[in-house]
Length: 72
Image (cartoon, rainbow, N blue to C red):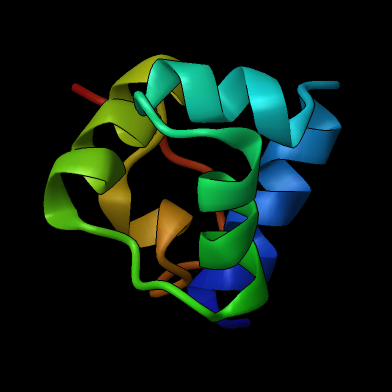
C-alpha cells in the first residue's frame, strides 16, 4: 500500500477531515488534499507531526509495515 492511501485510511479511521489534518500540519485543506492525491509530496516534518498526532510509527504510516505500531 502506498503512503497516500495509508494516510487517507488513517485519517478516515479517526474520523478527521482533510481540513482538520491540514490545520495540524499548518496547511490548507487543499494543500493536504494535494498530498493525499499525489500532487504534492509528504515532507519529513509533516510525517513526524502525523506520527506523533496519531501515535503511530513512521514505518506504518508510510506503508513499510502493515501492523499499526505505536510510538515508543
